[in-house]
Length: 307
Image (cartoon, rainbow, N blue to C red; front, side, top):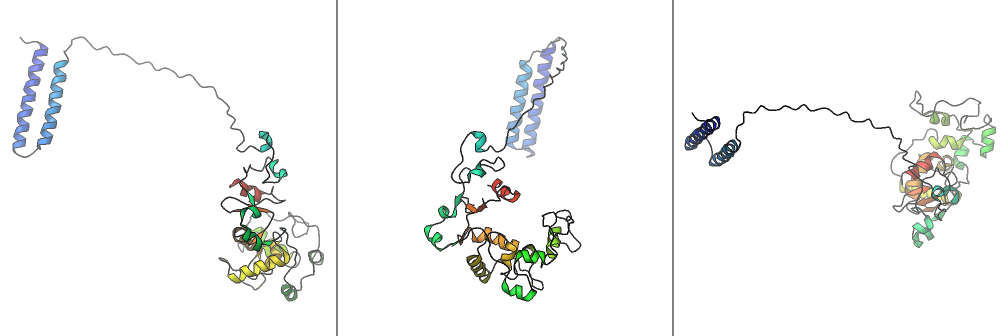
């Protein structure tokens, strides 16, 4: 009587011969390809060899139970990431010549690593010779034609006192003793609270009014500035300077409000080198960055953080 292993081997050999004969029959009927036949034969030979090489055993298999090890709990570790920006004072370094010393020492101002240059160093001598030089201050008042049409007072102080007076503050811009509404709140006409307040200051605080509003009855323009508007902008800057009080400045430029003049100044006039303002310096890409006395304001800090 053949052993169990011999019987298994004979059975497997017979099975492989049957499979091979069937494959040859299918191949003759074009039901399989030659390539698939060769691949199948390779698999069959590998199976046959593996069966023949593994002798059977009657020993029972030992099943081992895998014990689950409990991972030790990690102690919570506090990680201090440290400041995202380190001032030169904390590093023990002195201020650079590019930025005023008081700004270098201020921890709230990000380190600039000498990326800024004043206009005199950033632009060529030819551009510098033709640029309008300003101090960063507007020294004029309202356009005389507007004064005549609407009867404005001769100065800011007179305009304030003769139209209600009161103590001015940013929380009470009307000087009425009542604080203004929540910042950014939209009104029934879609205006922000600031724009609504400005609309009530036409005679009392023209700078605040014209910063957000054009002359009554005049359409506000948006989009690119015309060549005539650019020429008028430079003319006013030459005569009265520029850099602040943009509401009063814009009274000379019909169809534009103060914040449009401010944006045009920073985004076009300064980067083109048409005006040199000591309150602005330039990145290597030519972007104008405010570095003046109000540098600690939120807007100035955001500009520096974007570098």
